[in-house]
Image (cartoon, rainbow, N blue to C red; front, side):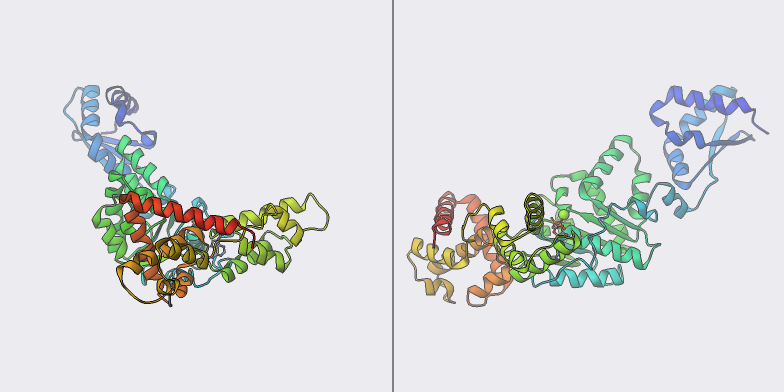
Length: 440
Ligand code: ADP
Ligand code: MG
């Protein structure tokens, strides 16, 4: 039986009146197919709409149809639309790559490598070449401004260039959390799940923001498993290693650790020089070599600051004739001939403070009276100098970078609990800074 034209309007109006929370914008796309043998058939545009209605709308539509017709009626939802792929696109999903918020300069071509990021870079290239087949998940961590976002985006650019149809989703962890919160409020999980589980490559930047977010961790866990099981590539970044993310569930920590975890360290001088050259070229700023070296040796460990210094010089050079010169650079750095803090300055102060021999601090002996000051040196070198883990290790009889990382971490942890140690570290920091400020 063909349904009378007004029936749908009446049914719809009744649903809207009785269950306003149920109604979604796309209800206007629904069509009434027919009313036959007591079954009212409603056609949806896609599977997600159909599933939503089956789950939440059956009762409301049935009641509305019965109230309107005065007869016993059951309701059937028919998916008259696309398969899942089209559905995903309809949600503004991967495939529609214009939605990727990528910076065009964050490519592999513009990424300078050095000892600080070699492993992460090599892994990133391998992943871009064969997503889902090499390191999965790929977890990059390092302090702020060391190129994590740049590297993640470089992978996205490379995959997109090679495989324009790949379904890529790149987003910040905050965006992910916001989506989870929206879905909690609106109870609309189908859409969420399609958004995240229907991708070839999922890239989430700054995943440490999942800390303390239980619901988001839960959702992420399921997303992770679904993608991982179907060999989709997962790429994550954070400002610390998985186990250092506060209150991150153990099951997530172990999943993050199950692929490749790569540390991005501070760049050494040579790498800083290379990065500055590249950034100057990209920004079309003419900078003499001596100024490049001057800036690279004065600006601290962070690459973002390095770029900032370059832009500041450029801005300053617009106000004078003669472009960027050493003189201008000195002026930009406030003419402060503050020496950068070096490892020898630190070791000397620490040895004096704890009354141990400098040679022993640097050497291989492992008595407790020496290992503590040595670890303190490594911690302070991390905090106060621009040296990479590798460079610091070299200074202490060629120890490797993980020894330095471990030592610095253990001091950092003890410091939280040990007030005395905390005071000693403050004292030492002040002493070392004084040494750096005293003219040579
Ligand atoms: P993070 O995400 O680790 O905080 P970003 O990726 O935002 O750091 O990097 C900060 C800036 O430093 C960006 O402009 C980036 O292009 C630049 N940068 C970082 N590492 C490199 C590198 N190895 N080569 C070239 N530029 C880099
Ligand atoms: Mg970043």
